[in-house]
Image 1 (cartoon, helix red, strand yellow):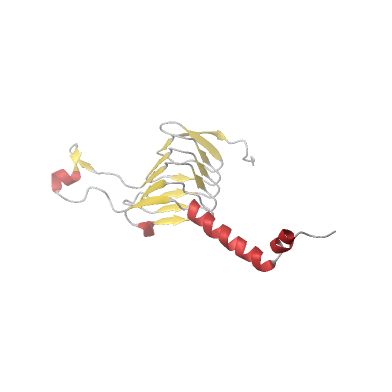
Image 2 (tube, one colour):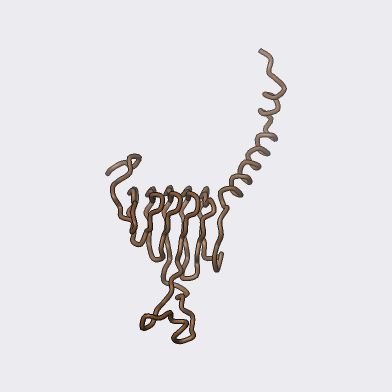
Length: 165
């Protein structure tokens, strides 16, 4: 059976390598569309992450995201917080900085799905393969393999794709 010119072209090792490189470059550019407020060196993204216009605020800590975690549109990952003294913003009382420079790291495991509009506040850990529902506000740790939803978010159950044991 004769092969078409296109088949021969696609089977060429050089073409295959070029196509893989192009796909990888395009995937990385598309997957890494996000904004970092403050120090970008405090954002640590794993392999194959997709950030889809997520805002990462690193003013009060580092953000660690595991491999192959995906974010829906318009997520907020916020280490930053403002300190108050006697009910007023610290900066207005003492003139000093009101956002602590550290202590509110966020850790998001591998294989997670953070759905659109979710907000993750500083000082939390989200375990591997967890799912955070759209619009959820994460203020405390979410165990691995759990589905979390609500304001504030609560771990509701193991998600259907998670094996028990």
